[in-house]
Length: 147
Length: 150
Image (cartoon, rainbow over all chains, first blue to last red; front, top):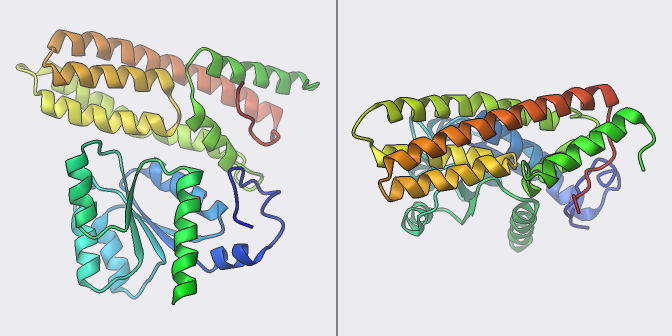
């Protein structure tokens, strides 16, 4: 059972195979906005993921350099110190194969394309919706089955 | 119909926020994330929004004091502000943000100023209404799962 639109605590009380799969998934939320970090952190936890947060691209890179790894990275574009595009490029150069998803308020197609070209797997408008997360989890579970 | 008078009051306040166009569907998404282990999640997110966005409001105010206007900078600030406001479902604030950006794109400084004054009014009004709403919500205790307004 893939968790649907109302991922309330009552609907989380029944464990399914896909719940177990989601519980093994880890995510990193990279955003300079405390509000967005809180929002995405909660959203992902509702779907059973273990979540960490980072305030900017450099902090995200440092986590990986310290040996952390995540199945999913939600990457904001505009951040101080190191922005999302630079962080994404650096992570790919380091050999990170996590799913990296841009989450941005950029509305220019050109800017989004440039962000995608940094090495993203997907790019969504922030904030993420339940539908976006459902899609990403399906993709992640598909990738896990293939590997 | 809700029998508890406080919860009834809360339902009425909530419906009014949607009916009068202050909030949109994104607010419902926030409510759906709230649960027993995070009973004040929505209020916490809204509090963070007002804290974060105060800085952006100040940046825009300061930018509007400098002539000639840097419309590119004004647009960039408002773009961020609009994004934050969208995240909590602040519908009227978002609408004014969109209008402001249109004035920036057309280089209309007076339009920007007028629009910004209206935006600040909507921003302040929403804050008062949400503060009152959350005060009643805290008194009423945890509610059932969020329901979408008709």
